Image (cartoon, rainbow, N blue to C red; front, side, top):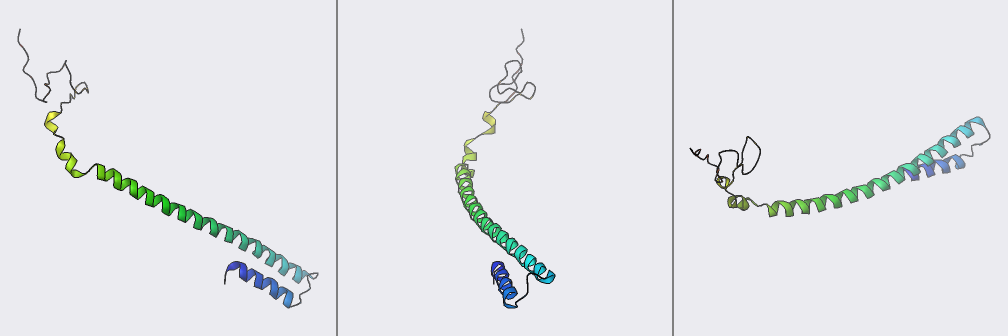
Length: 116
């Protein structure tokens, strides 16, 4: 039994027991049941929204999984073999790839200074 059904049952029970709503006890019970009914409606709405968000997150997770698969497939481990570290020269002193002021050759080895 859902919470909305339970509050409807309590409303029916209040009516079926012929409790006088004009007496203080009847007013209290009616107010409690009305409050429970409003709370049940709010909980039902939140449950519906939560289910909608759960479906949305599942779709996002699926799409993200596809993007990750495509991305990592593009950067397969076999591609790493195409890049050779020895073909790259980087100067630590001036943060340039190919520095004319430093004595690094294009192959990454230090050049011998030219004597004049």
